[in-house]
Image (cartoon, rainbow, N blue to C red):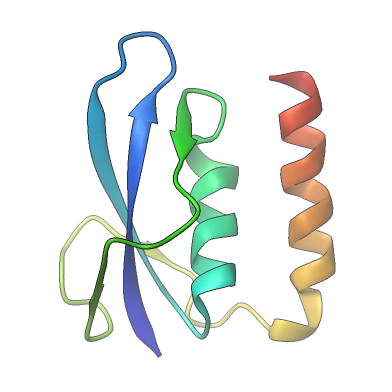
Length: 84
């Protein structure tokens, strides 16, 4: 389990921000961040930092998200991208 940090770019202003998620894999962390912030921000594909779990406050805690449900997560993100 690690805390992955991703850069986000505001779609209207271009401002760069950061979001973090603790997860079993970087893919789960990124998808959860996209699900949360994807309507307003472009989430970069590659994480910018890795920390120990729950290292920085204000994270998305997806540490209990099962890897077996990753296809569901991918589908939810895809739905969001269609409506954005």
